[in-house]
Image (tube, rainbow, N blue to C red):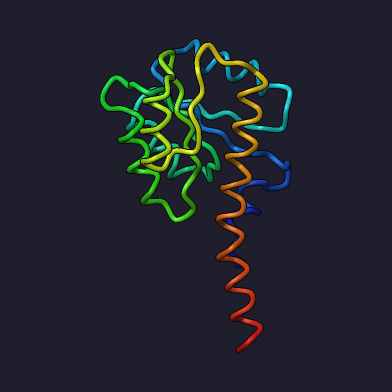
Length: 153
């Protein structure tokens, strides 16, 4: 039985990029589905931290788009759990109050980007694509090191 790499699991046979939307608001999930519904991207939906953690255990997720405030907790709680994962997904924070303060805090703590709501389709696509590229590059580097080490031995 061969092990699949993270990239193979991420893109599998359908070429699907998995994005996890974390928000207690159905309108956030619906808006994101409308924006990315035409693509090969798969949108998973979670309303709270518990369901987020369950989905992260079941799926290889490249990008998490998280509402600033959750019912119990915030995007910071989600980020702390993401950092513990072997192939840390990129986190994008979303908020109606996406000001310079939130943007600076998010980037300083390790989030990839901040998006204002209501979502602008162009900005969502740009941000998710760049977040996916960061994630992809991050998992490619260790794979390259392993390949080089195996070739050297």
